[in-house]
Length: 482
Image 1: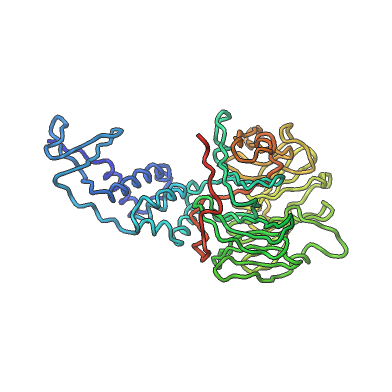
Image 2: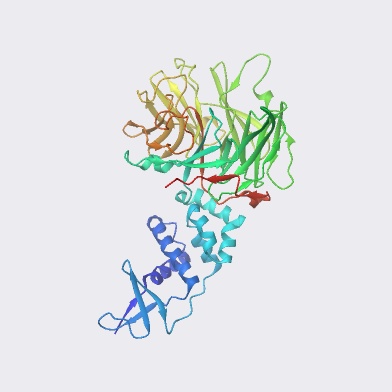
């Protein structure tokens, strides 16, 4: 008689040994991690349904002994019923948490309601969301899918479209990236994003007049939104970000010509902080902001605006969300023969502040700030020659995201483009926006200038984690018609 080992148990034993030896960080196991996690998730769910013995007795012809029932699915023997079984192994809570932390956020969400109450409580907890976010940012970026959310700035559609950035960069030309639309109760703008949360802004109107402004937080991955926050005054210069020292999410806005800060929480109110306007207005010089919505740089706790005077003197105006004070620093030096009428564009690449200039009227230069706030750390990342597909307008390329040596950007022509930094090739990605619920706008493959875009990463962070009343009815997924 011979014995057939159950592969699920063998993989479980292998994982236990790996965790004890703390060897999950090696390159070998990083390559194996995702399929192993999927196998172990199935193993854990099956354990909750019933015990699984670690081996099966069969005779010499491979036939199970009497009293045992075996089925085979995809070549994997699995014991379904047994007259004599061993009790299931006892799993440590720490081990279960380690396994769940290796599963992408989008896979954990639908499974919350199909597992036991203790796992559901763990997955829904604030600490688990923080640990999962920390792991996805520092150890395994594959757990957090980069997504692009957008809305119309031309027509007041109550729709926000979302598509996968990785899909745009990895799909073949004949495989378009689908846009997933979400519908809200009213037209909303996107102020900013961080840690998987989008800060939305809307206006309440009566008889054609704006009577109030409101802001709320929304996590498209979990589906939860916070109750709207009432804002007194016009929201123009603003920004949303995370104070990593005090573990607070904050909204900045200029209201009634005063700099105000709101901390999201059960009892928070608007506070007046250091004056914003004195940093860019005085009686001797004229100046303006290139972007009115501050760009949040993760890890620094800062919002950033690009500011210029006469398009010849350009710098970054920075708001520290921890200290709630302003600072400014210069951009990379430009050549004297550069066309200063072409507005630079600010972005985030590889978790660093990035800026793109037009240089000598022949190409664009992308710079990366390796050490935040230190002008000497500006490093030249890429040189992109002018190309007919990119167009020529008084704007530079807007850097969006970088995967290996491919840069996703919005070109002056108003199109998404993929710039291969190795061979200099330029491609137009195929983004299918035919069902995004914005019929008066042209397809994304033709022009994107009538929309505003916001990059975000999936997470489990939800407004109720920091004391905000939450609901799941403000924004709903529009399912495609069959």
